[in-house]
Length: 424
Image (cartoon, rainbow, N blue to C red; front, side):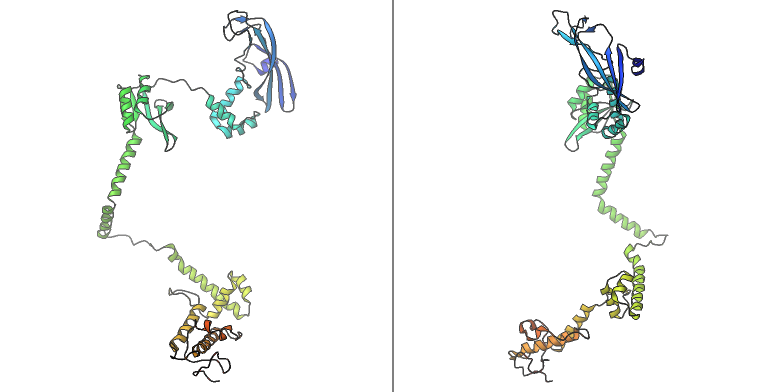
């Protein structure tokens, strides 16, 4: 009963016992034939020498793993001239020699590997109840035998890359069934001619315009009709036209400009302005609205920190907008003057009022320079700032500022005896 349940199509084996451990089903299986054939001389032998057990993985049952405990017998070869004196019985329908999986499980893994690949196949098989790694599936794909070659009369020849830009070979396709039939190690004419000599049934060969393939077909299959396939023909024409138009770029550009100037346009010109210029009015409107909101908040004695948190800007920006007293809009395209611009204007005005110093003044220059520095600093300082400056007694630093002809320091504060000192 168990034998027909687990092995309905196999003969020569029997299931003696079944038991379960966790998620694994165990089967005790043994062979039922009375004899076995020697793998060398193929003679029958009935004399049993000993036996041993093999543990095999089988197809899962209802998501559970199935393990076979196969009892294998050893036989004695009775042929004196045979080199194999003792051999083990073989069950090719159940398991291959030295394998750890049954034949049907190995076929199932190969099909899953070809259909799903390595990683996806491994995930699918784990759910089925057959845990296997992706490397195992790829190894089974590489070890799978090649399909039998079918004679073909229409052959497609092209190159394929083992390593792109480094190593190339030749791929041969059966155009009648759209299937790859062979791969050649290189792209030489001799290799292709040798393959074609072994397949005289080829009557039509499609290829690209490579000279090596044309020579190989002519030598190996002189009876075959050579056809330039449509893909390479169109691609070669396209590449040649592109190279020609690239060389004639100047003439094409000149012809385009001439035709645009001669042919009037019926449609109004499209707006070709950049997106940034089209977005400027909206940005200006937003800036003006924010500026008016800041002015209104300042009028209600709201602090800068609260205004910055409300409008989403920095305190310096809100304060600067209020101090300027003018709209931040840049509709005329000019930048809004800031504090640095104002300071530069004051310094330039002070320089124009006193551009030169009197000759022979000696140390009076330092005093005059110090006075000019204090006067410019007081002009730049906001109301209420502390009127203390350390540069008043430093002639070296004062010489770096705009020089004025008169000393603005009161008596007793001058660094030297200045005849031109102003009086209080």
